[in-house]
Length: 177
Image 1 (cartoon, rainbow, N blue to C red):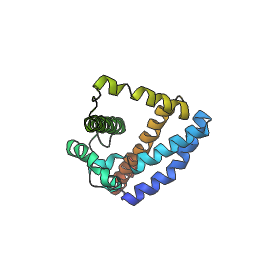
Image 2 (cartoon, rainbow, N blue to C red; image 1 turned 180 degrees about the vertical axis):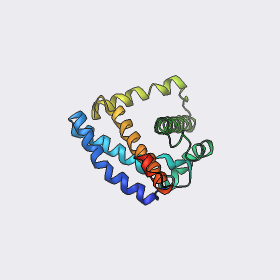
Image 3 (cartoon, one colour; image 1 turned 90 degrees about the horizontal axis):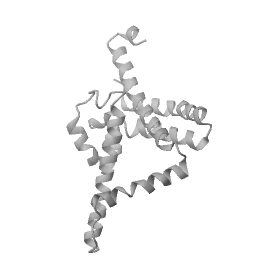
Image 4 (cartoon, helix red, strand yellow; image 1 turned 90 degrees about the vertical axis):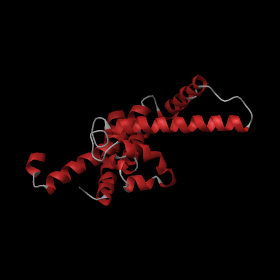
């Protein structure tokens, strides 16, 4: 398997064509930049090695505790962490769930501190609608799918690099090509 440094270099190198493809697909520089930034984030911070103590995991610094349940639940290189289909999707759903939980706990703690009424679940979920509207207004209607595509491609580049490295290491390069 390639080292973390090799994965990082490949991520930086491939972010340029990912951004160019984003521009070719949308004709919009902001959308292209979103794809490129999401690709970098997907490859450097959001990749499949979050299930181990890795460079990606270490980059989360004081927030790496967020990934501890993920690391405990998924075994390394399983189809749920390194899989092309489910890997990035599971990490996005997991991360959005954690963000939602932390935001809800923060709102609840603030209400308790200020002696106000804590939000119920329905009120809290209504916050995400305007947040999505704000995102679409400033980044475009297709910003969320484009961001997911960039995240997925960044993580996929990691998985495909691992696959290529495994085939080269075992001498089965002809089967990979």
